[in-house]
Image (cartoon, rainbow, N blue to C red; front, top):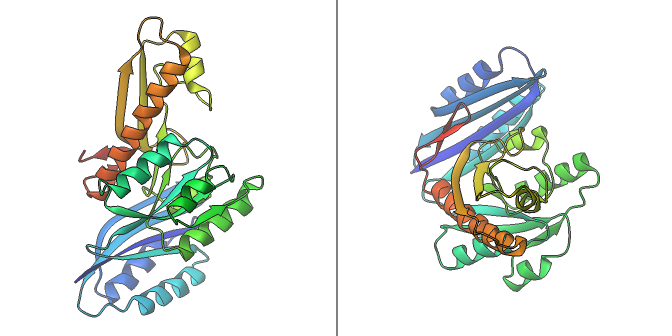
Length: 281
């Protein structure tokens, strides 16, 4: 049986962190499959993927040893274990728009997405009935204090054994501190218009400027907000004299289609991210 671990360490930049972790894993006969590290304004982050082929996997012992090592290095540790063939658990982050989460939930129900929705999390109560109807745990986290909100969210994700996150029109900005812990595990959908318009009123801004092509982008979330590695894109021509409401409706349909496609690609393990670009699509 093959087992996997994704290990994330975050803390003040210092020497010896990578060597310490890799040497520890080699003691447990791990195969290091990927390693990425980044330093931004003195803050160090490392994401490492390791695997084992074994009949008896000492998960607790490996985790406890990594936790002890992280404490000695004064680093914050996140470890996620998975078994080959195991169905992944998704956290659906929402706010109040229904089109994106409804499309994802419908695709899961039709088995077009080979994952289960473990939780729905929001900064508001608006979409609670959507989760309640499907008997999915619904969490409300107040984001007025972002640090406290993100700490609470990280605890929920750990408790619910979440594998990856989908931002289905979640209208709150996640900090680098949060995103680093889920590197290349957060999928976002964004109305990327030509030219690009920021904020929640992207379609209205595009309409007022008279754009001729509307596009949407599914991408991995990074500290650079909506500039993360692109997974999939959709676009359509604006019809002559088309109303704003029509553009918004068509744009939301494109968002839904694009987001579902991106999740399917992610789950098929066809994606590889190098230097901010996605390969393998």
